Image 1 (spheres, helix red, strand yellow):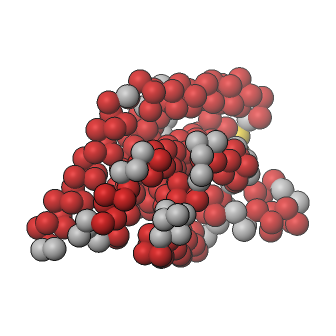
Image 2 (spheres, rainbow, N blue to C red; image 1 turned 90 degrees about the vertical axis):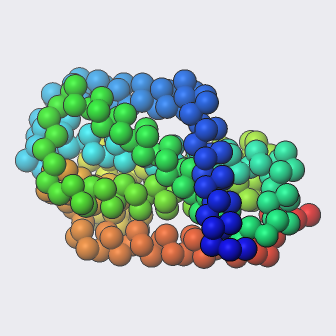
Length: 257
């Protein structure tokens, strides 16, 4: 395939993915936004007033970056896992695999769709958060890069889940038993400085902790984790998952029966 044909193939997949979640925006964009507003009200306004300050900021200011990242993570993941599994279930995947389209184009196309939904929901949640607190951006470049990389990482995670899933029930196992615990224990609602030394050390094996803290640094200028280390961890996970996804596509594991 020529570069132009590769570009058209990639753009077609991306456009299909964006049209897919935009067509049912009432189900894909509104519910997660409402959920985050409830978090803002309960944890920020109600519980936050009793907690007081954390890290030199009001509790609402402290949790908002983590809640924004949580919305980006869950929506990037869920978009790819549901879309790719549906494609596999309906038998449309074989048509793409037998076409001249390179596997990396298929992979990046689905990932781009997940990133688009993650960023869309993240933007909506960020806008809504401004009704509850003031956000003073410390470093916009860090914010943009962290959100983009995090969305890519969890889109790849959703892709792996979709490949191994054998039923629609299987696509909910990882989000329920892995993704949700990692997110809630990733420093969204608290600083790991509050934890005993042992549990603070254990928390540092959680990749979500690095993403949340890097994003919080971009907004508030404070972080429990070295920002350079956070970037290195995120990039390492992206490279590892991208390589594994390509391996699964190239070998047909979880796809060919």
